[in-house]
Length: 235
Image (cartoon, rainbow, N blue to C red; front, side, top):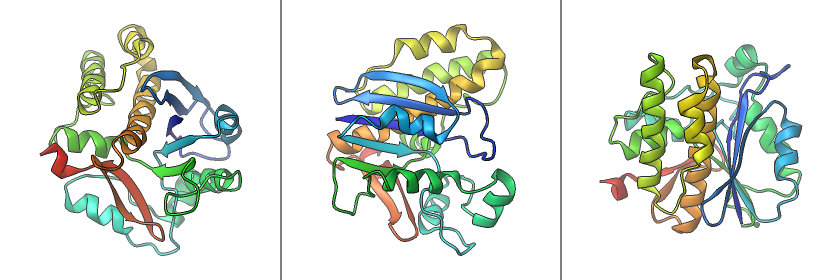
């Protein structure tokens, strides 16, 4: 069994070069691969050969035609978790389309399903790394994307520790720790993308290994859903 986290670059036509991070975990919680890619085809190439695989994508996979907040987004806002609302018209104007929905469609055509459908071996989930961190830190997530270089490195390392404390069966990837400490400051944005992919993979891994007892699905399969840590478990 494999668990993939995808921090999807939302820009389309063309997508940002190396703007998407992909993290692949084994069923033992070990990172087998974490890298930056550009196109949907590269993403699919990394996972096509794996028969049993759950994928968590940090992007809206279900985009309704209405321009209101999705139910899952209303719930997150009510809990104090900020996010960019899903709006098809805005996404098309700002990013050139709804890339998460398009990638999900490509994967659905290759035998994947959302979790309410028949298959349990090749499943797609929408995840939200910032929301995960917000919940497990009781509203005080580390800020590894903003601030001076020293602060971003420090908060990036803290994020890895927090993730492993929340899901102890996960091994922190030494490669990622080394990158945080050694890359030039200008490349920390790429490291942040990899951290988000790692968190996305951890979220679906925890959903599997704990059989949904430490995570919850917020929303529904018509309007969109997000898998996040269960608040009651954290409290």
